Image 1: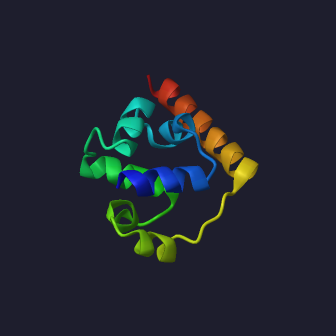
Image 2 (image 1 turned 60 degrees about the horizontal axis):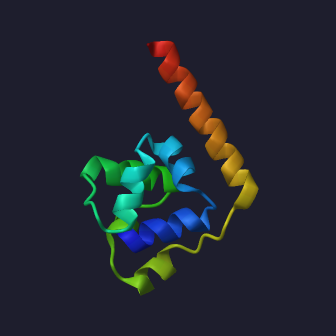
Image 3 (image 1 turned 45 degrees about the vertical axis):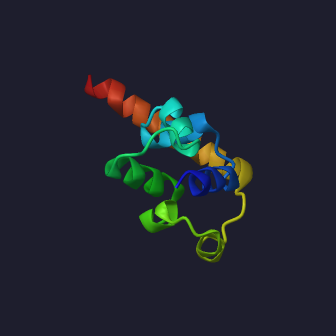
Length: 99
């Protein structure tokens, strides 16, 4: 999972912080998963897959060929970052309003 996660994140021009904000998962945790120092829980995998807009299987497969075939996404650059930031801001605002 680790190499696919990092490739997907980088293809979408997302930093660890961006992905953390999108998922609600600590950026240190994401980094540890990418570096194979921590095994993610199933719900963590689901959150990551949702944020990266891919199937869970794509994150969990170890086959590079499968990864290349199923994921033909190129970097979406600034637009993706803008949307990620906007989404994270909305989540934070909702969370603060709930408290």
